[in-house]
Length: 82
Image (cartoon, rainbow, N blue to C red; front, side, top):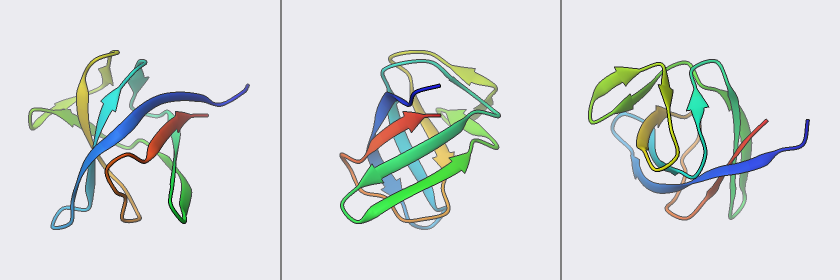
């Protein structure tokens, strides 16, 4: 299955190592995402995500979610779904 861009990083919270992502397509817990931008390019399985500090299992296009990530990311990095 080809990768599809599903969002863009809008913020990064260093103290909790979480990225805020504005979605342009749906995403659910268990999906694998790839974040790419600058010299950063890594894959990660979505273990949990939040909308307005509430844990959710899935999110839809237009939602802004928070996801814990293993590397530092910056605003504008692209998010793909595997």
